[in-house]
Each structure stands twice: as structure tokens, then as C-alpha cells.
Length: 193
Ligand code: THU
Image: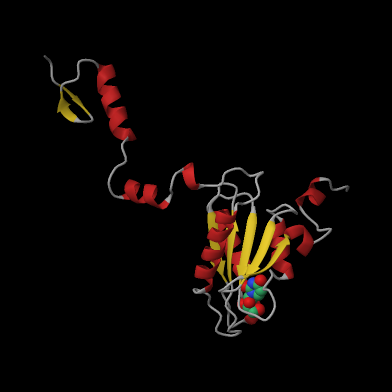
């Protein structure tokens, strides 16, 4: 029997092919440390809503509500004292949250929806299938005009855009209802010079 060197160290493998197979099977095993953390943070497809044509399920909308409420708790709103959280569902069934981030130079403040959108795009999301905005007010807190347009870039007219406070859902709109006859990427694609 001949002992040869392979990536396992000096272990006998009858042929180069069986050595390669052993290495491949080892590489498929999750490794400790970073790999294990990645696997835990990204649960498999089983609990994801990956059907982009299906309306988001009540369970998924509940995930959005929870995420938006948690995000609202992180809001940086020392000037208005009006904390807002938002959560967006992407085409992979992932939830991306954001909060408002105000600034001493007031116009530089960022809305919760814009901050959630930044997270979605950074994570590789291409579409917004549903949105939830959470704030405490006498009226439902809907996305501001600018954020409706920002969402419109990635969402269809029938995408649900819900409002909620810490206790209940306060409004259920679609993006098309909030921003009718909107301008979007298609206008540029079909642009006549
Ligand atoms: N705000 C949001 O973050 N989202 C909305 O949909 C409405 C308004 C923020 C902006 C500002 O920080 C504060 O709420 C008061 O306008």
C-alpha cells in the first residue's frame, strides 16, 4: 500500500480519484466558525416566500410588521421626535428593515423606507414585493411622497404598502393607490429623443 499526500495530509487513497472524492465531500461539510454563522443567519429556502407572483402571506406580512417595529426602536429622530420603522420584502422572501435617521442639517435626514431600501439593494434584492411603515400618529403613517417614488422603482402597482403602529395595522394600501399614474423606468426605456 502506498501512502500519498493529499489535502487531508498523508492519508492512503487508492487512486487520485478517490482522494479527490474525499476532499470534495469534506468541502461540502459546513465548517465551524464563519460558515456555521453564515448558515444560521441565512435559513434555507424552506421558510421563504420565493414565489414572486404570489401575494405575500399573512405570516410574511407579520414578519414585516415585527421587523418594522423593531427597526423603529432604533430610529435616530432627535429633532422631530417622530420615530419611524419600515420593512420591505424582496423577491427572495427576505425582509429588510430601516429606520429614519435625522440630521442637524435637517434636509439631510433619511426616511425609514429609504434606509430599508438601501439594505435591500445592498443585499442584492431587485424587487420590493411588500412594504410596511410603522409610526405612532393619529393618522396612519404612510410613506412620504419621495419614498413612494423610491419604492416605485422596485415595486409593482399591486404591491401592498401597509401602515401600522405598535399595536395594530392602521391602513392597507397598494403602491398604485398611493402613487397613481407614476413615472418609472419604463418611461426612460421608451424615451423618444
Ligand atoms: N418619516 C419617515 O421616516 N417615513 C415616513 O414615511 C414619513 C416620515 C420621517 C422623516 C422624519 O425623520 C420624521 O419622520 C418626521 O417627518
